[in-house]
Image (cartoon, rainbow, N blue to C red; front, top):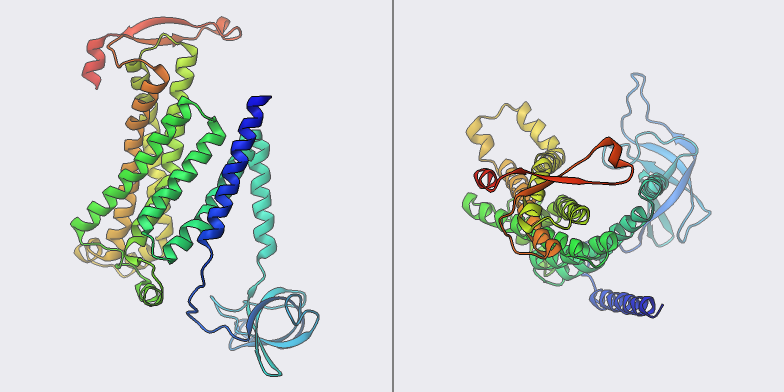
Amino acid sequence: MKKNWKKFLVGTLCLLGFLLLLGKVNQFEKVPLISTEGQSYEKAIVTKITKDNLAEDGQRYGTQEVRVQIKSGAHTGEELDAVNPSGSLFGMENCQIGSHVIVIVSTTGDNNVVTVYSKDRTAAIYLFGLFFCLIVCVIGGKKGIKAIASLVFTGVCIIYLMFPLMYQGVSPIGITIVVVLLSTLLTLWLLGRVSKKTASAVIGTVSGVIIAAIAAILFGKAAGITGYNVSDIETLNYVAQNTHIKIGQLLFAGIIIAALGATMDVGMSIASTIQELYDRNPKLGGKDLFVSGIRVGRDMMGTMANTLIFAYVGGALSTLVVNYAYNLSYNQLINSYVIVTEIMQGLSGTLGVVLTVPITAAAAAWLVGNKKMTKKSLVQPIYDDSDLENEKYLYEGTESDEGLDEEF
């Protein structure tokens, strides 16, 4: 009871300290980059279609005039005339009576100019998020609840710690590594508590992420890629001129964040496997545990590598399809900033994931086994159907030291 009270006290103090840190970090004024005076984004419902823009050929041209009832802000309850641009990126494609929309209310004196900004997607986002949390909790049980808690913590760290410090001039790469460390520590602690398994997973995860960052920086220098070779560099330059954000490091900080999930998955899986093997047979030596971890990791390398590559390809799919449609030559395509950047992100992230395997396996074999890496024959469990019910395990040496040396 006394031990639990101490844990609760330490946890409470850590939480309060973290909240105080967030409060201190966020005590600054943002530089206004655009004028928003007299302008607000409010929820509204379409009550009337004043003028439609549907042509006889079934296409919509120009703007749609509607009447909306404001549901938030200073004009709540008022019915105002609005214009719907019906664009692909701005406005709503087809306003109908009862449509929930977000409108821009621009007030100048006694005049209000109302424009439909987009469909109100708030309900869909909340419902889908709730459904996601429910599924994770139902399937994962207590571990699922902890996973949601760690996800929320990571989001809070990114929004209220990483972004503000970047805005104030802190190195994006440095603060990203700090956020990765905090997220890894909490996530793996929630899943595995304070244990050798958790420590091994943390060592492997953080090492893999740092390796991914170093690989990206080295690749970038060799290929002449910097953080300024991105599609929205004009906007970033304007932001950098008015703030202290070091935009040159944002590209590499993004690679670190993107690699975190996969490396954490690999690190925890390898550490858990080695812990389980040791629990089943404490006679296993450090070398045996390391070899088993490597073998499990080999099966994971391919899938995790594909996960990262597919994620980057999916993010740049529109650009890749456009390049394919224009039938660009090989030399032009392979040397374009967009393609080289995607290759850099994919390869560096995957390299971090792959090297997480031996690092985690070595850390777990040393910490969990608590023995030196001695040459012992690999002992493998043999499962007999009649023994599974009572969890009886027989062991026999199946490989010699020479075989292991040849394989590794």
